[in-house]
Image 1 (cartoon, rainbow, N blue to C red):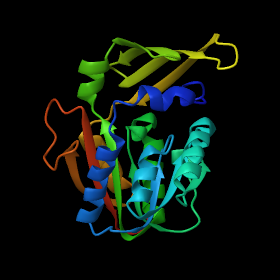
Image 2: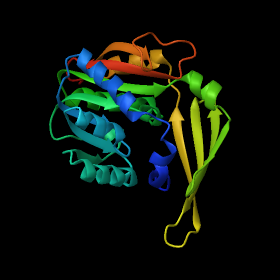
Image 3: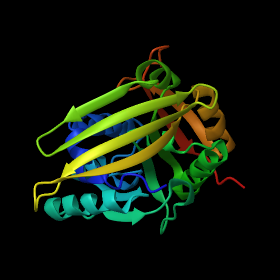
Image 4: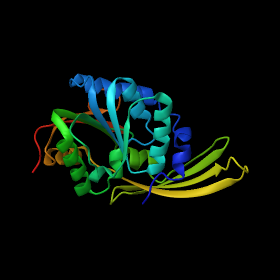
Length: 253
């Protein structure tokens, strides 16, 4: 599935409720807690480059990887405006390749939930471990089972803006722990004022915290901590998003 094609054009418009600066500051605080003040950092699943740009502004030497060419095209336009020296690569998370090792990897906005097979997620973690410098740090967030089950579940959300609108339908399979997002988009054609309709389907998997810790360890990484989002406290029963921190501890065989 080629995700974020039609939606890429209006992604930032409909995601303007997210304070990327605040999210990035939280990630930067975690990086600094583990001694990552500067150096090479990978934004895995970088999307349109919002977090990538914030980390570059903070002084990190950034690379961004995403599977969507449309999203990366928007990210590169932002790079032209900011002047930041960011390398963008179009790759799948479970197959990504870099030119050398890096000090840290971050993955924000529940990108990891898009990896719906445990073996693929383990391979993603193994690759992260492989490309991290000795004792390099991996920080990523995930939506929780609680969020899929109690917040998204089978709910529908809709929003209309001046030149676009969307209908977002959710279907959560409790047994498979897969949440299907059905996106119907209406985007205005600037040339003739007519609206084009796009349909996209996205799939995310709900993982339990214990499952992720096990996969982290099986991949060769060292599990360090898991926090309720934007805090340094343990996750709660009703946490909707959690952050994991892991460390390179040797290359997995």
